[in-house]
Length: 105
Image (cartoon, rainbow, N blue to C red; front, side, top):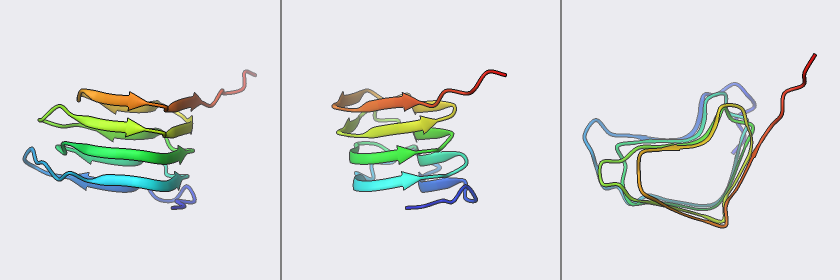
């Protein structure tokens, strides 16, 4: 999925009430979004597997009321602010976070 730095969010799920959508994001590349690669608010029991997120301010923003999520075999590359923001208990395995470096004048 290519944002071409014009769009704010690659994949978005947002609920006003805590929910258990059981969403799986798997085997995708998400690149060049100005704010978030993935933005999930009030979602629970979600799985992110084999996902590459590059050139986004925040790779994954994931909040939940049920305190569970799984992130495996993912790469968060060249994020500008945060690789992963969450308030959940996350099972994190085989995941690489690489933050870009800004040049000093």
